[in-house]
Image (cartoon, rainbow, N blue to C red; front, side, top):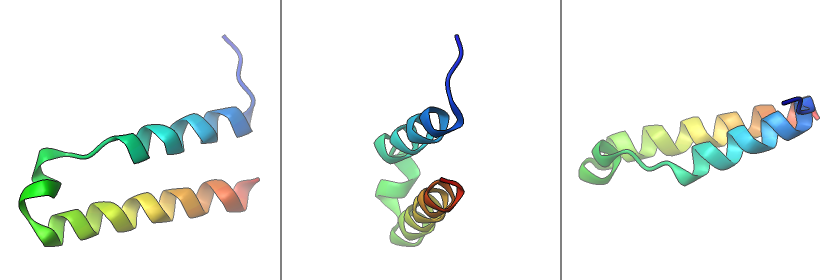
Length: 49
């Protein structure tokens, strides 16, 4: 299976955004950290395009 770099980044972002760890639902600080990580990854994906 061969995918382009853009396709790979798109799949990575979709996977990150669809994943919500249980710990993130229990603690606001952990949830905020996870959310910021997702935003940073999304930013990286956009910049690399």
